[in-house]
Length: 111
Length: 116
Image 1 (cartoon, helix red, strand yellow):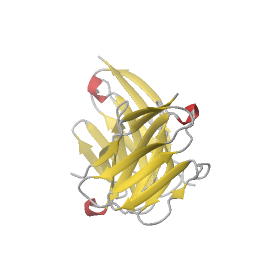
Image 2: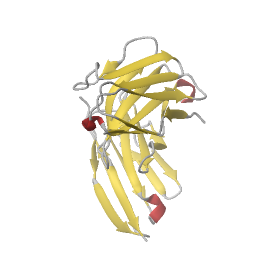
Image 3: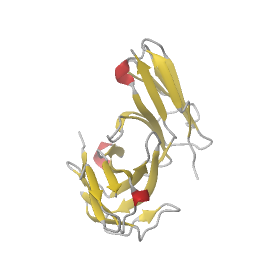
């Protein structure tokens, strides 16, 4: 069974601060996705990374895929209250296979 | 872009009754859909993989007779919670893989089930 360890589980910060969320596994993934979910809604895809060492930026969000494709990180610069939500990483072992989800990181950004 | 829609968004049912949740891919064909269950502030727990035209594959610990899955067409999968009990109350989410978009997984909006 593939496992994805996501940390931290809960994070509460002030507006303007930076933060990093980590997603680690002993398994290799063909691709890894990051999602953001708000209460009562389905997860919304933020990014997909597929190449080891890949770095993708989405405005203030920077995503990195580890060289060995076993881990990933999400860095948010100058967090805003609108960034509040549950962040989920998910890895897929094959291109069309099911996803293994991390435990999620609940982020609260206080104004 | 690809969209996955769930219906109903929320449902309240009496204990002992059955309730059906639909998952539709609106602008793409999905040979595979996934059903998840989620508790508040927790991650998604995969319940089963729904395959069009064949039996669903259930994860360990998920009762297939309790959670009936039917994937009758390339755009529709249904999850029926049979003889629902209060402990079945949860947020149920489906997702579908869009081969036309590099097998990207898109999620539905989720369905809140409350069993009273």
